[in-house]
Image (tube, rainbow, N blue to C red; front, side):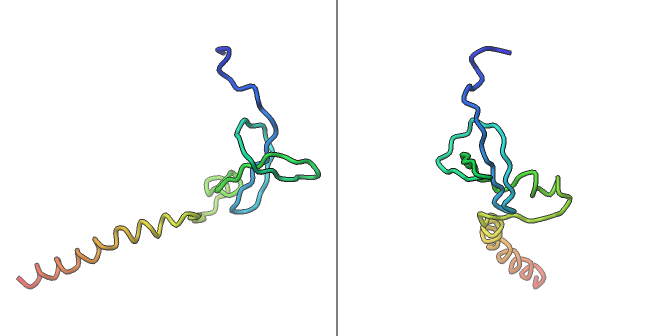
Length: 95
């Protein structure tokens, strides 16, 4: 391994899956301002939208996680094309 490229500040960090409130503790160098008390010990907290405990690949369950409303934004954005396509098809039938 090359020297001087790996971080030196590894510490125990609590990762919390926000979709199912599962918490796991592992070493990380990620910066955070939040902390979490786990069994009387305070750890820096990193919040996750999805982890190994809630991901459909690992759980075997198909579950839709849309915390930011991305699906609704997509549908609203492309809904105008759906409405415009219908009148054009009716005009072709009339000719």
